[in-house]
Every structure is written in C-alpha cells, then in structure tokens.
Image (cartoon, rainbow, N blue to C red; front, side, top):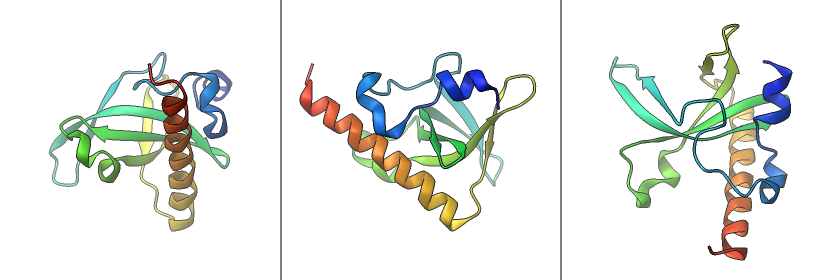
Length: 122
C-alpha cells in the first residue's frame, strides 16, 4: 500500500472528530464498489470508510439496497489494499481474531461518529 494512502486516506478510529465524520466514499476512490458473490451475482455497495486496525487497512461496505433499519447488521468488512495500478483490492478476513480486531475498530468509528453527530446535530 502506498504511504500516501496510509498517511492521508485512512481514518484513525480514535480521531473521527477531527475530520467531521465519514461521508461515504474516500477521496480519490469511488463511493461504491460492486462485489461478486459466491453465486456469481453482483451486489452494489456503498463505501462507508477505509480504516486501520492493527497494521492493516480495512474497508466497510453497506449494500446499496439496504434500508436504514438494517444498516448495522448488513455492514461487510474486508481487508483493503491497492493493486500496483492503484485499484482497490479487497480480501476476505479468514481469521477470527483479525475479524474481531477490524470489527472493534469499525465499532469505534461508529461510536465516534455518533458522538460527533450528537454534539453537533446540524
């Protein structure tokens, strides 16, 4: 992964207040990604955020056709990197401990975003 990405594009889960919260999509990256599922169907997902956990980057995706009530249960988390050409590269998280680490980091981002939203309801 490029240093540019690590230094400027990812979120620090402990510091959401400094950027004003996630707005879907990341500067320089598309706001949506198409996932190809195991049965070869495609699902359009909104990029919620790209964030660090441990020494890796992860991406949180929300299926585009999910209504507001299902948002929490429908978020998909994948490992995230870039190809040599700069294209997004997603990977399945196979290890339970790694998934727990990424999931906890994403939960922290959500909590920080809620705190910011409650403090500044505009």
